[in-house]
Structure formats: structure tokens, C-alpha cells
Length: 527
View 1 (tube, rainbow, N blue to C red):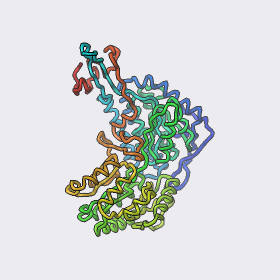
View 2: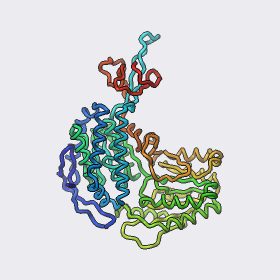
View 3: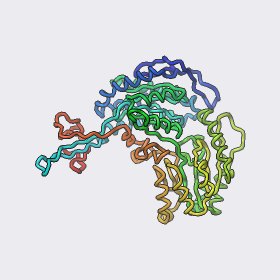
View 4: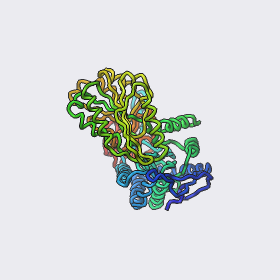
């Protein structure tokens, strides 16, 4: 049962006087449940509880926190179709997408549990002392990762499971030993409350401290501002727009004690189509990219919003086929009327720019909140001169740029803002002979793809989901995969500490039996 209240630790509360409802974009009506925005005193209480919980939660063994994460996964699955139906009613997304995203979320939780059970993620590093070294003795130094403290996670609009309440940020922070306060996204507050209830049930079942998790409702920015400014909050995770992520980043930097904001934001994910790919497989790539551009109504951060090619009859044929194929596809419902309106404004703005022509535009009548796909074309010179054409249009939209030659294409890549992904469609021979182009693309992205589409983010250790600003606020970290835990920890060195009082990961005997770097050698052996 969804109550519309806030989870402040283990308790449901609703002291605020601001209320709102979620919206069913498929039916174009408001949902019934009334949600109560968290009051300032509830925000403070949630952070205070998280701070108190941190001391105990951060000291639990990896196995204990792993049990907690696995219990969360179990409780989410136990909600079964009730959770799926709530998800669908608040997003307009189909049941298959909901179940797929739930599976991904459960998989993320279990992968972090495996990481904790294995234990080497703490990066234990030991340099033993040399007391008789001259001219001065060498101290005994031992370093490992420790959690930062209470973390605030902002739920995203386009992934109510995988990037929201129990999504990657939350799973990684809890795995690291950081209590989490979620600021739920107002578009799927009911889904968030149900998932939050599963987390609370798992916390009680595994005897986690009260305050290890809270879920706060908010229809505006006030709750988020209070959270980021709270002196006991130590880090922030965010997935969303450049405007929102940058506002949080600036707010955190202005604190008396600045804190990190790990924001994954906008990306147009450039695709470079070199001549051989279009000459031999142009029609196939056009069909694949028609599907990629429209997948999920284009509401993916990895949507291919920019395709770059060199002027040729093959590129002309590719554009013609892409337009024909994309106009065959039935439009999909967007997540919310506000997102639909932003899409309409964005594609209209770019279509009005000088030198832009329409390559494809779905014309048939569609229901409310369904996004009509659009593809534009422009030459390389106009694209270089007009930064407006670099803007992300969140939805089924893309621009194809006709470059005069490879040098102009490289100039465009060098001028682009940071991106999550970059793709090259080419032969292996072309890759070898275009090292400057490859280097230019690699310099602007976090993930570089060969002969594929950028949509689809595999959850695994080798995945990099982040890139140079504004794709993310810190390109050194990923928001997907077990290495995302590194955002919520910091290194601490222990110098000349007695073995008996060292953390288990740094003790001579290696009681956790983890892989450690001891005197520059990776080993599981005792010191």
C-alpha cells in the first residue's frame, strides 16, 4: 500500500503542507495517491538519523552489508506485479521494460553483495617498516578505502528502478558503508515509496541501524537544496539534466565544507560513420539507428543524438534510408507531459537554426504525450559555427552532419562538449589509418564503441558510464558497475599502528583472506 508519506528512517511521516500527485502519461490523467513533501524538520531528522547510523553501519563486515543488499533484492522481487503496475502507471512505459529494469536493479544489488563478500575492493595496501633504514627509519604504512558518510541520492526521471531509489548510486553507497537519503523523483513517487518500503523491510530483517536509509518526497527543489546544504551530508549522487546537476554541484561547492557531487548529466553521444561502413552496410546501419534513436521514446542518456559522416552518395543514401525507416516506426509515450513539452521545444528550436533541413519527421496523429521522431541534417560548417546544434534534445531525435572531409569531422569532435559515449562505424583498416580521429573521439567520451549502437549499458566491472563535463562532473568515475563504489569512499593511511588495533583488512595475518598489495606485490599471503 502506498501512503504518500516519507520514510524517515524506519518511520512513515508527513508533517509537510505541500502535496502533489504523480501522472499517468499513457492515460493522460493524474494518479490518485496524494504525496506529502518532506518538511524541513523531516529533512533534518533523516540526515541526523543517517549520521548516527553511520558509526555502526560503516563498521559492519562486508558479509553483513552483503546480506542487507541481497535482502533488498529479495524484498523488491517480493513486491511482484504490484510494483510493476505502479511503475507503469507513473511512467507510461510497458510492462516488459519495467520487468527488465527491475531485473537490472536486482542484479546491481547482488553484484555489489558479491563484491563485499570477496572483500578486495577496499584496496588494502601495505608497506612494512624498516627500522634500521638510514639515514631515517621507514615507517610502517597501511592504506585502505573507508566510507565518506551519509550520501544523498536524487532519483532520475527516466529510470525509476535502475537509477533511483534502490538503483546504482544507492546500491554502491550502501555497499561502501554509507547511509543513504533518497530524494525521490516526483514523477514516480509511488514507485519510490514501494521500493523504499522494501529497503526498510530488508534493513529490519538484517538488523541494520535505524537511519541507514530514508526516502523523502519532493515536488520542487526545496528538499534537495536543504539536503545538499546540510552540514552532515558528505556526498551527492544525481542523474538528470545539465541544469539540475550543475545547480547541485555549485550548491555543494559553496558550502563551508564543500562535498563531491557525482552527477551524470547530458550527452548527445556522437556517432562517426566512416566511408566503408556506409558504402557496404549503410542500409543496415540506417535501420539499426532508426531503432536506437526511437528506443524508449529516445529517453536514454545514451541516445545517439549526433551522427557525423563525410559528404558522399553513400552518406546521402544512409540519410534517406534512416529517414524512411524512422518514419515507419510507431511513436512511444514519453514519461510525463513536462518531458514531452521539453522535447517539442527542443526539436523545434534546433529545426529553426540556419542551414538545417529536415530528413525525417513523423507526421501522423498520435495520442497525447507520444513523441514524434525527427531527424535533421546540416553541413559541417554550420554545425561548427552554431553551438545551439550541440544541445541534447531528450527524446527520439538526431542530427546528421555532412562534413566536407575527415579533417572537418575531427574539428567537430574537438569542439564537442564531454559525452558519455562515442561510436565509430568503420572497418578495422579505417581505424588504423585514422588514429587522429580516434584520439579526438576518445578525448571527449567515457566509452568508445566500435560498430554498434550506444543505447544499452551493460552492468559490469569494465563498463565506464561517465565522461568529461558535462557528461558527468568527474570523468574519473563510473555510475554503473561495481567500480562505482569508488565515488563513496576515500583512502586513509595508518602509520605505525599496532597490529591488534588495525582494521581486519590491514592486519598482518590477513584474516579476511583478500588480495592486498604488500610491498608492491599483489598477494593474499600474511605479512
